[in-house]
Every structure is written in structure tokens, then in C-alpha cells.
View 1 (cartoon, rainbow, N blue to C red):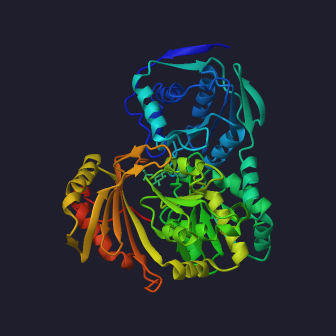
View 2: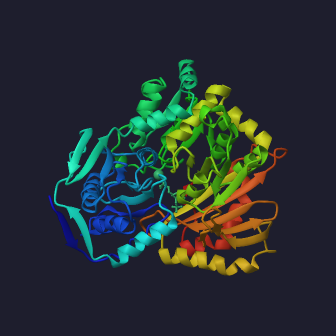
View 3: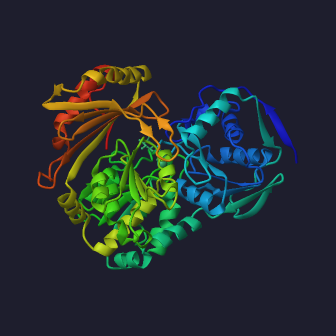
Length: 543
Ligand code: VG1
Ligand code: CO
């Protein structure tokens, strides 16, 4: 076997976004496009020769081809061993766990997460470091730098092994371990949660629906929910991963998981409903007759986590992304633990988790997780909810009502304007930034602006500074609107507008969200001139 050196030219658009490099499949199919990026990952690391690398993806179109490239290029670059999930499948949290358990120097995860899949849809490549978490900005910047000057890549002149056979194989001199993608992950869940209590809950007639959205979580959910926990067969729907997610958009929100929502709001609804995204790191939580916003779910999980064996010792702290509502802040305050506010993207939680400053983390985009891995984890959140329900034996509605009566309620919504003109989106943000200094004191739709800024994050562990992480407009009384552009989209720009209003426990806890936020929505639209600048009169998605 021989290592081949292939001459190549740089592509100048390989800057990783919020979570890796994401482009349309045909873009990735350009000559050497994926190869360049994979080589840049190796070129930006050092000291990995002879060590272990984890490789896996969410099973979307183009997954197998790029996994073959990763294996052959890892061999050529001197990696000692690749661990890969059978069929090239690994959910993002399972990959994170495998990296940690195997002592790997890192992992390559192939996914575009909640974005659609298929020959003309999205693909993505992400590098995770030895702690199991997404590479921090200094590493992604180094990778990006390498992509801009790359002149050659290395590839083993041997086929990658058959990924469908579990066991030991070779690629050149490098060992390849093809493993069951579910086993280790399911065992980890069994360590964290009280499986006998959850089994007893299901045995008592508790009913659940889990929509795997034809994405990677299906095999995990079948094994854990139906086999290990005894949920009725058929609890998991859309449980077979498909390359195009059955033509759906594997984003667990009220638009793309509408069938689940309708079932949960209908007559004879199950007690508990949940869904996960393309790569298994997000979770949608819906109780019988009640949608729990991801921000509220984070707060409720943190407040009740001690009911699960893995968290019985209490939490070291809570971390949330800046646009996530402040509901978790009130829980942290009551528990007397730290609350950390980070920029959007899981990579910012890694240092806090490693330093023992946070145990539970979350984002408003349906991401929740803990120190058990270094990624957000959809099924983990579902199982923590089940563990809490198994102990409390209350309905979701009752648990939410009691939570709000204790902490007050953060009414919250996010409006997404998708695939808008990139220049228009950039100008909208620039205009907001220009106005920031003069906004305080102005009154819009009856709301007085108390402060406006562009969020910056100084990492308390490594001292790195991340600027321009979203424009915040804070109104007198504690309400706010936040504006930022997505870093995961692949066509045009996506504007996200996040709106929040806090209602104390003594206030009205039963408003419709749209009514509660009415003036804030109107003020946000006016301040950013959303309609005039984007040409849109309504958001594409409201979550
Ligand atoms: C979005 C979410 C962010 C999340 C990221 C990756 O990023 O807002 O909270 O961490 O997706 O999630 P952006 O830049 O588009 O707003 V996943 O499940 O797509 O890896
Ligand atoms: Co995801």
C-alpha cells in the first residue's frame, strides 16, 4: 500500500460556521473540495501520529463517500486507528462519547444537522477535539487558514473497508474498528438515569411518542426507549435513518415536526412527545396539550435534575447561549450556583464543562446537554424528562405550571427569516449596529429602550474574546430583542430575531405567547426595519 500525494488548489470559502463547514452537496462534490477540508483538519493539528480518530455521520446523502475519504486520508496522514460506526453512522452525542471513552485525539463528524439532506441538499464536516466537543474558534481558525494555502493532500492508495461489518479491519497500515454505534451510548444513558423507575412508568400505562424524523436517532431510540425501557412498540416513529430524511427537514420544531405537535394537542394524546434532529443533538419536548419551549425545558430540567441518579449530587453551574431566555438564570439563582452566558454554538460550552464550572447547558434552538459528553444531546434531554416524570408522576402541564408559579415565566419566541438576500441581511445588521449608541432613551411601541449592545464573550477559562455575537436591545422592565445572522445556513442569509418578556410569578402566567410578546415583536420589526430591508412581512419559521 502506498500514500499518494495529490496536488490541489485552495478554495477560499471553507470557513467553518456555527457548527462546522456546511454547503450544498454539489458544492462538496467539486474536485478535491472535501479532500482539501479534511487535509486542513490534519494540517492544523499536531502530535496525532499513531493516535485514534473517531469518524461518523448522520447517514445523510454523501455520508459514506466522505467517510471513505476520511479513513483513507487518516491512514495517509499517520493516524494509528480510526473508530467508525457501522454503516458510517454515529449521532453527534454518540460520537462525542466515543471520542472521550476511546482517548481519541479527536473526531470528524459528517452532518449538516437540522438542514435537509439529499443530492441537492446540505452536507457538512465538523472536527471535534479530544474532550469530545466541537473545535473551539482558535482551532477552526487554524483549519480555515490551512484551507487557504493548501497545495496537496495525502490519501492511502487502498479502498476503505466495508463499513457494514462490525469488527476489526485495516486501511493501509492503519487499524479500523467498526463498532455498534448505539451500544456505548445506550450504556452511558443507563448510568445517568434510573432505568427501572422509567420502566415502571411505562409499565403503568404511560404513553410516549418519539419522532426520529427519519434521521440518526432512530436506532438509538428503538434500543433505549422500546427495548431497554419497555415503551410500547410503535412509540418511535420515522425510526429508520434515510439519506434524504424522507424529503423532510429534520429540524425538530413546531413547523417541521407539526404532525407530532398536532398529535400531542389532539384528543387521546400520549403523555409525552419528543423529536430529535438530523444528527441527534437537538430535542423537541411536548407534553399532552402543552409545548415546552427549549429555554423553559432547560430551566425545568436544571431545577429537577437532582431527581436523576447522575445528577443527585447537584449541579456545578448552568450555562446558556445569550439568545436563550433567562428562565434558567432564575433556577441558578435559587440553587445558588453560577450562570454563564455564552455566544451561540456548543463550542463555547466546552471550556466551562471541562473546568467544572457548569453541569447543564442549553440553547434556545432545542439543544440541551450536560457534562456527560461535550455536545448537546437530544435523547439525553428526553431521558432526563422521563426520569423526572417517573419520580414526580405529574403531568407535563402540572410540572410547567408549578415551575412558573415558583420562578415566574419568560415568554419567548424566535422569528426566522430564511434565505434572504445576503447583502440585505448584512446591511440590516450594520444599520442596527450604527444606531445602537443613540437608541437608549427612545420609546418604541410603548417600550423604552434601556440599553443596546453587540454581545461579546470573554471566555473565563482561556481568556479568548469573541466579538459581534448578536445585537441586543434591552427594554426597561427586563424585556429584550436580539438580532443575529445564522452561521449554519447554505443559501443566502437567515436572520434570527429572538424576543423575550419576563412575567413574575405574581403576574399573568397564562397568556398566549404572541399576545405576551406583541409590543416587543412590533418594536423589533420597526427598529430593524425588517419588512423594508428583507422584503418579508412575516417570518418563515416561528419557534
Ligand atoms: C444554529 C442554532 C445554534 C446551534 C447551531 C448548531 O446556529 O441557532 O443554537 O448551536 O445551529 O446546531 P445558527 O448559527 O444557525 O443560529 V445543529 O443541531 O444544526 O448542529
Ligand atoms: Co444537530
